Structure formats: structure tokens, C-alpha cells
Length: 309
Image 1: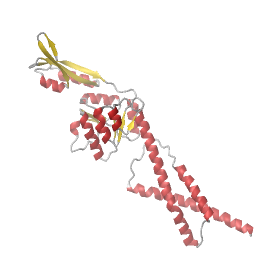
Image 2: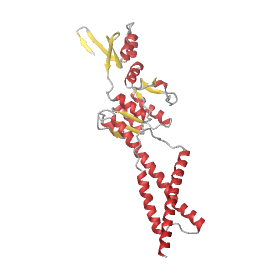
Image 3: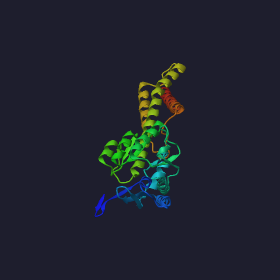
């Protein structure tokens, strides 16, 4: 509100569509000018002024907020890891489309109104015109579709969505509220830490999975092996000392296999056939190796006894 000698003058700024509705008249080229600015990736605000009963449309202001230089590489690396990347913005469709093109994010550009019954279309790579309070519902919509959702944010209005996400990620410049609601806080500027976190967490998961499968197979390997040999020959295949040595050797083998440096696309969820097939394959391999070792050991023991006699 500005007061001058002739009275009071109101000056308003906001969304072009809302201010155009409040003004008595708008320029004929409004839609063309608005699209031209939005296609440059600029966030467009409208300005209007007037008295208490009459507002005149003054013009448009384009605010440029270019992506970080490393944004394109980050998006491509995440996509190469099998991570679905969705950009959420409060900007208009043309602005969102221009920014997505600049960072190399392909896919449909959808509006927040496209979410029906809590379901997000699977081909939406960009969500435009999203109010801050709707980010929470978008995270819930993705979780309803059984996605593991990671959400990045920096403001107070992002806190509900960061808390709801499976992995809330606050950038280094985020507010204290956003950091408190997040599971991960980046300490360096930008988002490259997201890629590092994804690589480390997946590598840790793979190592834990490999160790668990090997350990489970070896837990049932020894009693089955000894039972089969005893049933077939009536003899114990191993002495207590050899059994201890074999168990220790198996532990070293299991720990060695737990090292996993895979850096490509990873399986994030195992189906039922995988859960059955993987331990069976490991058990068969371990069983065969144990039999070879045991037969060699028995042969050496027999030769030693024969030589002693």
C-alpha cells in the first residue's frame, strides 16, 4: 500500500492467472508474453496497481532460478542407478518443462491435479503447479504404489513431506525444522551427496545380503553333509578337529564373500523365487566344495595310517 497526495495506491504481485482475474483489463499479448518467459525457465509473477475499486495490470516479472551446473550429471547418474527421479515445482507447466529439459529429465510434465484417488501416473517425471502443502500427499501417493521414496527439501514447508518420506534429505542450507524432520542432512552444497548416499547404502545392503545368504547356507550344510555320509558309509566323515577347521575355513569364506563392490544397477527387492533359488545355489556350491575337501582330507588320513602301519 502506497499513500500519496491523491490517496492510497495498492500495488499487488502474484500469480498471473490470479491477478488477471482481479484486474479490470489485461493486455491482449498476456498469454504470449507469459509463455515466452516461462519457456526460458523463468518463474513469472504479475504486477498490478490501482485504487480501492480498480486494478490495472502493470506487467510481468520473470525471475530466473537456473539449475546448478552439476544437476544434469546428478540426474543422469541417478537414472543409471535405476532411481526414478521426479521434479516437483510450484512453477507453471512451461517453466517446469524448460527446467526439466535443461537438466536432462525426460518424461511427461504433469500437474498436481493429475493425481486421482491418491495415485500418481507412472510416466510423470515432472509435477508442476504443486503447492507446498501438497508435497506431503505426493509422497504418500508414491508410497501407496509401494515405492521407496526419498525426498529433498530445505524449507519449513517441506518438513511434513521430509518426515513422511522413507528417506528425508535436507540440503546443507536447509532450515533447522527441515533438518530435524529429515533422516539425512547433507553437509556440502548441492545434491551430489544424494548419489554418494545411494551408492553406499546399496553397497552395504548387498554386503549384508551376501553375508546372510552364505551364512544361512553354511548353517545347514554341515549337519546335512555329515548325515548323508554317515547314512551311506556308517562312518563319521570328519574328526572333531577337522570339523572345527572346516567351520573356521567356512567363516573366512563367508566373510570374504561379504565384500561387494558392485556399482551398477541393483536389485532392491527380492521375489519369492529369488529367496529360494539363491540359498539353494549357494548351498549346492558349498556342499560340493565341502565334499571335495572332506574326501581329500580322508584320503590324506588313510594314506598316513597306511604309512604308519
